[in-house]
Image 1 (cartoon, rainbow, N blue to C red):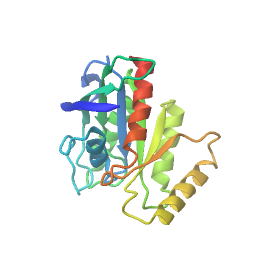
Image 2 (spheres, one colour):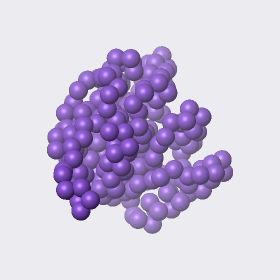
Image 3 (cartoon, rainbow, N blue to C red):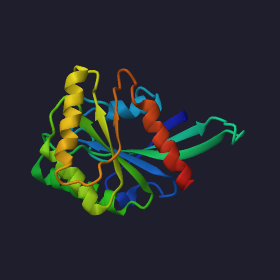
Length: 213
């Protein structure tokens, strides 16, 4: 998949205010400061598409970006096919210096979006690979399972730690999941700095687009 262009569309306070649900949509979410905006920018190859910040809790709305991509011609398909789809940047969960009221509003906004957005194709849950398994991440994935929302995991910031520590943290994360999960979700390892994982993540999106478009 080749990203031709990407453009910010709108920030919405509720799923009912989002753009028409007429294109495949991929949402990105994780704990605050997990590197979500940097990952989105890396995937789209647009450095300033999503706003990055060192302060947790800056993303407070449902942010839509429209993407145009193309698939290269193959032996089976001589024609290059274009596709339009959405990337959605969701507010982070977990620690943020906001009021309890604001946090509850965010939680309700996110739940409504995840459970009711008709064209939501996949949720990418971002996990900081530098840390051992966090209870809040495991609990969020349990919620996605209860809501029957399809998701994959992206372990971020793999360039910030040694590979032995990253591998151990990923192994420990899935060991924790195996205590309550029969089948484990697909996962990717990524670094926004080194652009690792980009091709594999985009390949999954392209595969899902073919099923929807």
